[in-house]
Amino acid sequence: MADLNNTDNEITNGGEFEKSNSFSESKGTVEIQDENLEFEKLLDMYDNTAASYDEGEVVMGKVIKITDSEVIVDIGYKSEGVIPKQEFLRPDGSISINIGDEVEVLIVMEEDQDGRIHLSHSRAASMKIWDRIEAAHRDEEVITGKVLERVKGGLAVDVGIRAFLPGSLIDTHPIRNLDSFIGEEIDVKVIKVNKKRGNIVLSRKVIIDEENKHKREETLKTLKEGDITKGIVKNITSYGAFVDLGGIDGLLHITDMSWGRITHPSELFVVGDEVEVKVLAFDKEGEKVSLGYKQKTDDPWEGIAEKYPVSAKVKGKVTSITDYGAFISLEEGIEGLVHVSEMSWDKKVKHPSKIVGVGDIIETVVLEIDQDNRKISLGLKQIEPNPWEKIAEKYEIGSLIEGTVRNLTSFGAFVEIEEGIDGLIHLTDISYTKRINHPSEVVKKGDVIKARILNIDPENQQISLGLKQLTSEAWDDFFTNHEVGDLIEGKVTRITTFGAFVEVAQDVEGLIHVSELDTKKIDKPEDVLVEGQSYSMKIINLDRDEKKIGLSIKAIIMDEKKKARKKKPKPKKEKVQKTKTENKEGTINIGDLVGDQLSSLRGLTSKASPAQEEETPAKDVVDEEQQEEKEETAE
Image (cartoon, rainbow, N blue to C red; front, side, top):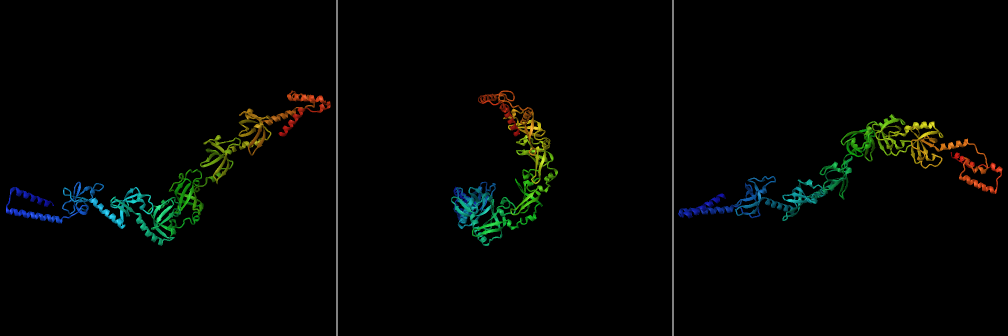
């Protein structure tokens, strides 16, 4: 085309030269006319050979030049076409074509004022894709697309043009993790096209449904109970896994996954796994299938008692740890439990993790087999000798021990006899006489004390200790050397509302009740007793078994009165007139005066004979004798 333009210029210039020089030789005129005829022929030939295109038509072209902003393409037209370079740029800024490449373009504008044809490669590709999409929709063809990203309600898929795949049409069951599809190439069908609005809706589910329908028909024909078959794990729940057997799903329940113990199906399976399972039950009409995984092998619990006899030592791996113990795997499908109480003889284990860790290989002793409930009880402490058996041999009941107060509770004090071995001093074994509300009243944590062993129970790992029993010898000596009626000196140690506790010997106390403080009624013991003061008392009760001593001051007073009466001579029988006027102490009181007056009145009406007066005893003497008899009877 450049040559044609030059020839045209030359002809034009030749005409101008002819006019300017007025050259009109005949030979020259004939030559110019011949050249004009030749040029017209050439133009006709070019117009006939150049292709003819319309706007909006898609044609093939060849890249002949690449500039900073444009790509020049020869489409076989009389003028070159231009395409914005941006249409060929990759995301990283590099260009995707080279000179000489053939590309498909759309004629946007035939020629502009500069004689250039405007082309578009991207629009040509888009038109071609839309044609293909519409054809796929019309013919229900399967196309392949790449998942770009997750969008609201589904996925964005590149099928040459950005299209939408709703979440409900991704699979036959709900998909929780749509992100797992990003970057994947998937087969889909076009179910809706709107070119004007640029909308394309896809479905993957319709393809799966068609495939499953065919597979289901085949599976239903061949599947039967007891079969071993393969399937793909489609979904996992807390109670099991759903396995695609070929158009029909079967449920593999968690209890049918392993002979051993698992807490979640994800411990064994992952979505997408190909698994071999056994058909346990098949409902052809309801299309329900129950599957088993552990049933492919024999039940390891059969004959378990013979394989792991009680008291046998076995090794296993710690698979999990809970608050109450550790689970030990003895073999595939066989686990035993070491309870936290079976981990140490002499330590109080707060948590099993303080003793063992997951993955540890440990040796244990079989304690119990429960084949029906598939349970094995194991013991870790039984590997070592029981120190409590040695305790029973080492210490005798009644022997004296020394230990450290390790802990105080509301019911007693724990004393460490030796490392890991504690004995309990119960609240009731702290004192014979004192009422102890809390052991802290007598001992403190950390105190080193002596105590007496009352009982040893190796089976239940218990030792009973006593503090008050340390004083048993003192009590025995007191009971041996004293009897009821003895007079003793005692020091008041504590006063209560009902009486007072009195120390009658070292580590020996007795009680004087408020009613035994005096012959007259005493309301408050502190009115007549002082703590720390010693008093003479009489023993009125001894109970060796209960370690109780009853004391009395009142009994001493009554004894003294009785002795005084025995020493005093009996009064002679006198006239009533005289005895009623004077009492035994020779004094006159109001009662006597009243009596005398009454006697005088009687005398006025009838006088007693002298003999009667002499023989009638005085009333106060009679009353006193009767009172003495009552007191002696009360004693």
